[in-house]
Structure formats: structure tokens, C-alpha cells
Amino acid sequence: MRGLRGWLLGVLLLIAAWFVAAATPDGEALMTDPFTVTAAVGAPAVGDNLAVNIREIVVSDGVSASGGWQATGTWVVVDLDAWTVRTESPGRIGVAYLVLAHRTIAASERPLTHDSAATILDARLHVDVPQKGSLAFEIPADAVRGTAMLQIAQDNGAGAGDPTLSLEGGSVIELPLSLSDLPTVSGRALTPTDWVDP
Amino acid sequence: MTRGWWRRNAVALIVLALLVPAGLFALDAIEFGAVRNAERDIAAGSSTSIADWDFGSATVESLDPAAVGAPRGTEPVVVTVRVDRGHRFLRCTPPAIVEPATGRSWTSITTLDWSPPPGSQTSCTSRTGIPYDLVALVLLPAGEGQSVGDDLIVELSTASNLAGGLDLRFAVDR
Image (cartoon, rainbow over all chains, first blue to last red; front, side, top):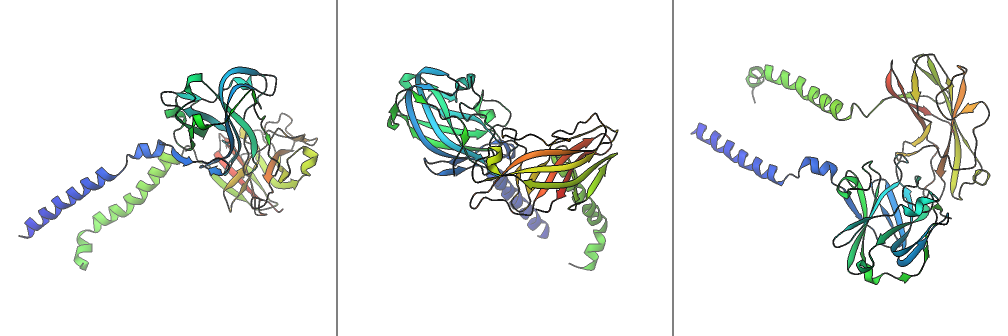
């Protein structure tokens, strides 16, 4: 009788262990999956080390940047303040994406052609000392409708080529957008990266 | 449980008592051993030796923000660590500032209008073999609710063939 009770207890424990294992998230995925911080325009959004305050988002039929660079086309321009909260190493907006219905577009590096401070992409950020700047996304003209997701993250060393890799291992600041509701302007000048006056 | 149970399982318990801490130590060493340096704390005004190099003491001196083109609401500071160079190979990072209370840390900034004073340098390498001041300009926040407390650590990481990776953490009087 005592032996039977022991076996029964063992089987029950095995079943309980199976439930625990099934309910436990994949450890590797937990270590690498980004965690999202949802932002709102005009309010600080703080990730694990990167923080931003998105000031304005517009659609423009052309952009110009410090250093004399300019381009035509359809652009989504994001003006924001950015800073870090714990460390300055690393301390950069390494990647920013605009996730559309069927494609993901990385923040353009083209405005940086003549001036490395033309956008805030990859600018050196400082702990609790905000800087202002712009991010610019060149999108197809027919894409200015429907919803999109703006994603901003630190540089994890993977480059911007593959979002599944470049967003791994840290926080991603996200802002859902309705592209057709964004203000439309003409020839938007990007805000050069500079200190924010307190 | 009776005393007999402990006696019967004494060997297993002793093995467990050895293996559990050893396992934890091994896990820690495997996961973090290669990326975490050993640390050495140095009292304010004191110096320390690594191989045949001497480091310290460390000081932090505030500058006028307007004089170096820093924005309002910030406090630029010059961090200085005295270095007496030895003959053995050793690398080190520029000094940084750590606020122990919050874990915030600041590294050198090179975009402000500031030059190292004569006789000082911003990197560890030196061909002269004579003592020098290792300096870095660091931009601290001084805005409301963000300013840095007086309890700060000047930290620099060193790596040598003899001592491996070692982080020096100098206490400073502000």
C-alpha cells in the first residue's frame, strides 16, 4: 500500500512538472526578445537605457538637411528629443524603423551625407542631458495610408539590415501611427542634432 | 525527521553542500566571467599599483558650462587620474564617472570646446615614461531632479598580461 502511494505521488509530480515546463517561456527567447515601451507624442518614453520624447511627426513631399543635402519624394519626418538613462556606452539611437503593412523601412542615412549631425540617428547621446533632432523615413508615395508602427532602439551592434536581429536584447520604443492622419507639409527641414534648451 | 535520517544521508548531504555552491560559481563564471572585470576600490586621495604602474589619486573639477559651450542645465567636469607609467604592457580606458546611488555613468565627451591642460593626456599610452595626468571631460546633468550627488566614483578599466582585466574605482571628494 505504501509503495503504491509512492508511485502515485511520483506520477502526480511528473504530471505537475509537465504543466510547469509547458507554461515556462523559452529561456533563450526571453533573453533575446526585445521588450516594447509604448510611446505617445509629447510624453517621455523610457526604455532600458534609451529615452525619447517624440515632438512631432509629419509627412513631407521633400526634405532638406544641414550641410545642404536635400531630396524630393515622400518622407515621414519624426522630430524628437533623445537621451540615455543609465550609461553612455552604448548611447545612441542605432536603429529606427517604420513598419508598414507589407514592408519595414529603416530610418534614412542619406541626410547624413554632408553633416553627421543632420539627423539624430547614431548621434552620441548623454545620460539625462536631452538632445533634439530628427529621424527621416523615405516611403513609397502610395504607402501614406493605413497604420504603421514607429520603432526606435539602441544600437546592439547588429546593424539596421535585419530588424529581428537589430532589435534583439533590449527595449524597443514603439509608437502606433495612422499615416493618413499625419499632417502633410512641403519641403520639411530636418532639425539638426543639438542640445535642448532647458 | 530523526537523527538517523541525517546520519543515513550524511554523504549525500555533504556532496550536495559542495556541489550546489560549486555549480552556482561555475554558472556565474561561464556566463559572466569573460565580460566582467574584477574591481578594486581606492579611497579618496589614495593611489594603487597594477604591475609596475601606479594610478591615482583621482579628482573631479567643475567647469563653467558657458566656457566650454555646454548647454544650460549641465555641469561639465574634468576628471583627472594621475598615472605613473611602468614598463610592462597595460591598456586602460579614459576615466568615467559613476554615481553608485543610481548606477548612472558618464563617459568622456569630445564635442565641447575644451582641450586637455598641458602635461596631461586623454589616453593611457605614453612613450615618455614620465608620470602624467590622464584626463577626460565629462558632461553631467544639473537640471532639476537630475543633478548628480556628491557621492561619486571615478572608474577606469585596465587590462594587463599580468593582472588581467581590472576596474579601478576611485572615491573622490567633491
